Length: 338
Image (cartoon, rainbow, N blue to C red; front, side, top):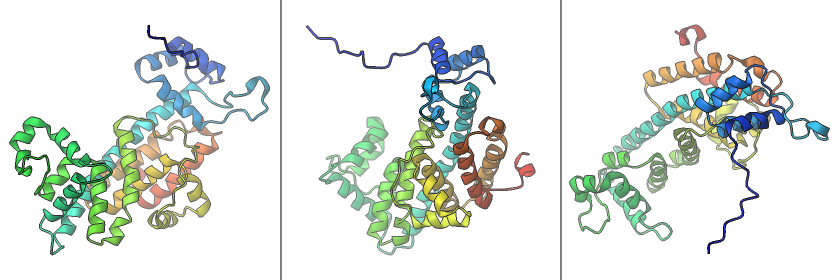
């Protein structure tokens, strides 16, 4: 007979009515939005656990706090709803920026390869595929990923010509086709290999910046909250001198840099803002994104700015990104809103 697992230590799943009671017990108020409207919003528009993840951006009563211990000092359900909407709008803009970073990284690789004498558009891909096929640590990882993506029918029609020996070892894929069938994460791995193979030292320094952008891309693509828990100090890896210089030009001092870049989400967004202007060469795309950023940052984000009058964390995060946008993305507000 199979013994039932003891799950008494696990948090119970709450129904929507119980969620409201739980929030009230945490001193989350319903002054700007009624309990009935909050209930409807939770049922129809948002996931409770996503929405409440933003509560970590707000202060609790300092200990000892007696009956208020563990409760929030100044938090209304409307603040969580507002942050949820802002987060969604931010993700839309970031996704547009990231897919363009990916696209123009491919263009950069192709343009650079044209100026390498020993490169014919096949050599570097064959070297990389051979390394992947014979890897001691993760053999055929990329091969398996490609086969999974293209599917058996597509493979028979198109990719069979790249498996000459019918041994599932790919070769002689032209780089312009190879770049289109790999994921962004795989593209960055290839970029690292390619910059080392051809001694592109300056370009290789962008790899770690791009890796963090890949993490943000995955979060955005899966609709994960990116503006929750901005207080965490969860990233102590060294920051590229390129980012340090970029932020210095934005008049962001050492204390603010160190404070903000130790949060993974703030760091990933910072890297995206940096890399977009560095790698995207289309003036039209840049102008389009600038308009999106200005509408978001100077219109929607501050629409309920009174909600955050007592929130030093969120005000400081806004100030940090304001400095970056003022230097690199700001345009006339009236024009940006037309």
